[in-house]
Length: 368
Image (cartoon, rainbow, N blue to C red):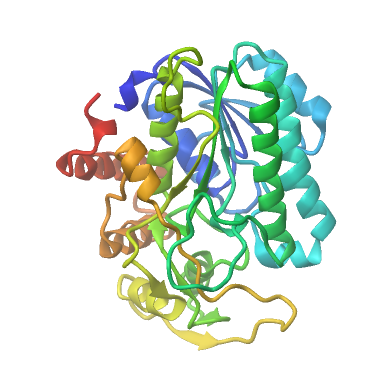
């Protein structure tokens, strides 16, 4: 799987204690990697990181991504071969409350990682993760392509555009002969183990587990929902492709490219739809309408065109929307019921089921 490039490889994940970082760390461990993480702590309680029992299975470097010396020290000690940069301030509404911190974390944090990569000769591959919100949102009906304008009106979106610009500046200026690098942008991601504030799925899980109604701020907002394992399979497969490249021989390189990872264009649902679909797996759920602050606007429509990932990597999403919702609801139900105990085995089981479905679909990352 993934050309076996991660087996016995040293892989550093920044932001490994977050939602996506925890799932990526768990999957890398299943692939036989030696994993280290860099983060300033566990962002929520409960957390997927704790529930999956990851703390004692990896090396953790505690530090602020805004502190260049801390980042550099982690790289110097671990000497990673692969780097997945995920550390970020990832919440739109928080970016309105903490705009300076958001820019410092997402833009300057990315610069600090690039500097550490530049001075760590062991690094072979860097995959820098940003967001679909790095695109200037014109509220059009077709998906954004990797060549579309970057930008953003809210601080979070603008900071992600800045992170993309920083990464590509370093790639062009310093990484022409190595390491091999790319940036990735994913659409709306859901799955078990996310307890971040102001996200509809964690809001549902918290409220319904407490027997309370979930408050929906914007039920008509439309999103391209995908399970967390979907973009992660793309990140891992892209990393494998970058590792196989040579600066001297690559005719159509992946190096220096940006890639979108998201569900098929037709897989879009409103927030209200998804709440109802999740509720079908959670008896007794209720919901009520809330009003978001007027100055904290979020886009009503945003989706990605993923044709480039299909053409260049043979990558496409695996799960049907109904399976995405089921995977998500089952993880939270298992956690809150306590029936599964340590969620590491349940998480590994969902990864295995996802891989089986990908193999059935003939995806190339499963067969090499």
